Image 1 (tube, rainbow, N blue to C red):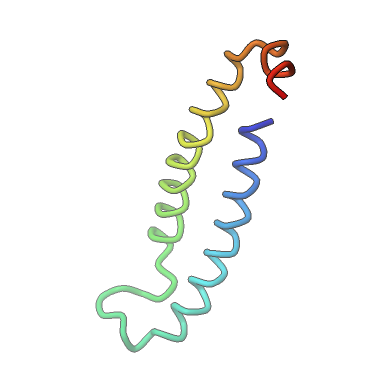
Image 2 (cartoon, one colour):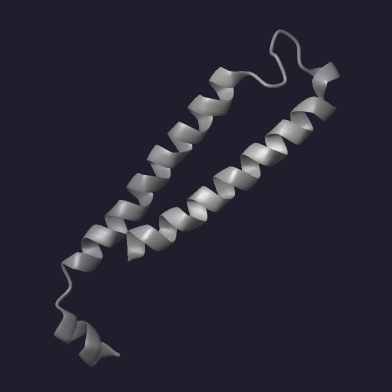
Length: 77
């Protein structure tokens, strides 16, 4: 559950970020030297790296959450 909620936010952010990158890439075409505004390598590599980092960042708390005894968590509430 922790992993699913975290990754849902990440995927939403990646989709919005890619859409914004396409729009701003076309607007800033004159400022880019030696790189195409819609460089496919960049649009594939960067989201994959961010997805991997965010998966690790979500997996660590999820792993710790599975180690907690449910009765102790309920008593603490």
